[in-house]
Amino acid sequence: MFVDALGSGLYLPLTLLFIQQVTGLPATTVGLGVTVAATLGLAANPVAGVLIDRFDARTVLVGTYVIRALGFALYPLVDGFGPLVAVAAVIAVGDRAFYPASGSYVAVLTEGGGRDRLYAIQATARNVAFGLGGLFSATAVSLAGQNGFMVIAALNAVSFVVASVCLLFSGGAVKGPRRSGEKPGGYRQVLADRPFMGLVAAEQAFTLAHLILSVGLPLYAVSALGAPPALLGILYTVNTLLIAAGQLPARLIQRRARRTHAMALAGGVFILSCALYAATALFPPGPLRIAGLVAATLVFTLAELLHRVPAVALAAGAAPPALRGRYLAVYQMTWAVGYVVAPAGFSALIGVAPVLLWAVLAALLALACAGLLRLSSRLPAAAVAAPE
Image (cartoon, rainbow, N blue to C red; front, side, top):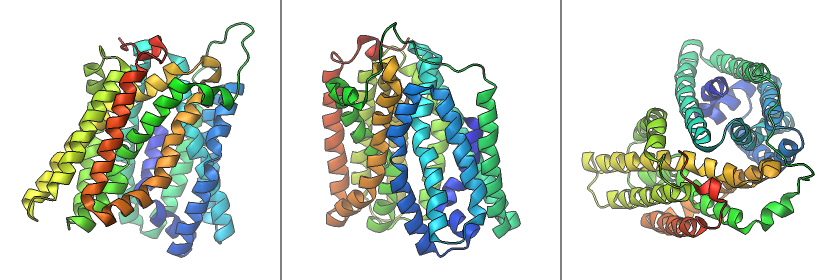
């Protein structure tokens, strides 16, 4: 997963520009094509859940690497809107299927506190790799110009191939335990699990909060507060570095807390970050306002660190082993919904009144925290228990 993230970090900071430079298509065509492809890719999430439960998580995970390697290898051959949508859709399918597959794979490798540690290590490795990939991307473009984008496409394709080889040579397929005579159900069983769907509903609020830095803050800081656009790059870099350095220490802090309560604490810190972002508008333009944005982003980063590991570990632990793929596919749909809702929703709220964005997010998070505390006694005890 480190190798995968290293390759992805090459193009993620320049996604639309990367595609435009590699294909030579107009920017408007690229934007529309990527949007259509991303919409088509949403179907991969529930399909991946079925395949994980039918086969095993590692097989599906390798499949996500292979199809994305193929997609990036084909990007230089794209010469029109139709081929662009086809190739981008292949990559989107791999991206959407990756998350339930990777979460399920980690879940069957270990249990209890070991699962939390492995999720924390995974998050750390991927953030370090994303950062390094971004640096390599900037170097390739600065040294090779437009040819640098072709190099990025090739290297990213190779990274997925190498990641596949790493998994294929990691040993035999690993499946979750299934009791004798147990038959896997379908998505109807997942949707009928009211405590788990309550967890998914709470997680939706957290997902929207995670999108603050990439979607909400650029609109708020630059459009509403008049902050310099360069500040956004600095805040993103600081956030990435702190998550890479702080994920394992954060996990140690939470090792004696029930996962529902750890998530609720993270929600409280997210609410504090919303309050600080809103308060920044009260400061005069200049260094004091910039300092306020930096302080709010540091608190926001702490909230991300506190939420990430207990959330995914709780979802994986609450899922019956025979249906873990489907359960995590439904859980990961919060991100698909977030990416659809956040751009338009955040823009509309800021357009009415900038403070309204932070008030709505804080209210949603408060409801999510209250819901999590109620779910503490309704979700499986082993999933909720302190990871240590």
